[in-house]
Image 1 (tube, rainbow, N blue to C red):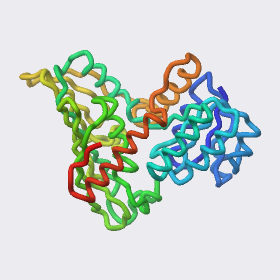
Image 2: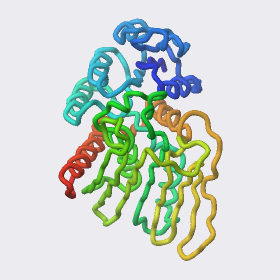
Image 3: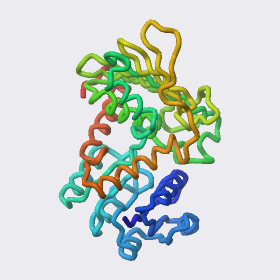
Image 4: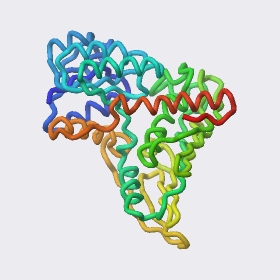
Length: 334
């Protein structure tokens, strides 16, 4: 499969690396407004998306750019003879724009996959398998404590992703959206949310801390407790970005900052390691590779895709509900 990528910024490195590690993928182009960055990827370099698509005729277009570029880039890619489009999260600048783009893709008959990769992290895949197998009894509650430790001081994010400072919505729109999708993957669709969000670093335009409670139809609850100023116990804070609990009537799974998953049976004090911590290439347990491998497998084997745009719109709806809840200080049903 021929793959052409739009974007060569900080996070794009993980996309390019993953494609290169797949023997059935051929990286044919890299496009960026900054030609030097495109050339640094080692792929054939372009500064214009349409020119890249005309020259390389890819099967897959991978859009790895900020949200304000998504709608225009997808519109151009839909005019090319491609088999699938992958677009980084957060998808578009608004829910309405995301809906319009999703409709365009549906009319063109081209699958549009949102690159929401956290659900592909090995600890979440393992946790879902163990919960489905009844290892913690009836699941009751999920908790994740985001503690990136990278948001203090006037230079917060400037060395890696400087646009974080000017985003009017940061914690949920840029980061917490990962757990909206992951909680949905693990527990199903939430039915209501309650959010308390705040800005702690005054140099930021958007919020960088807060709590969100997710309600589910069967009585389950999930808590996202996010604070980008504080850290957690890990050598690499970007491995898991925090710590998690998966609690049920028969036991608890604990996610540690090294990517380990530990099972404690109800009433016991000892824990067994269900997923050992290990060094994996790429980002976040190699979840970028896992998502892109999933897309290739879907094309090769005709299997359904996870995170198609039409499905992912629900994640954007939850995101909007969270911000409405925070603004009105009320519980918001979805």
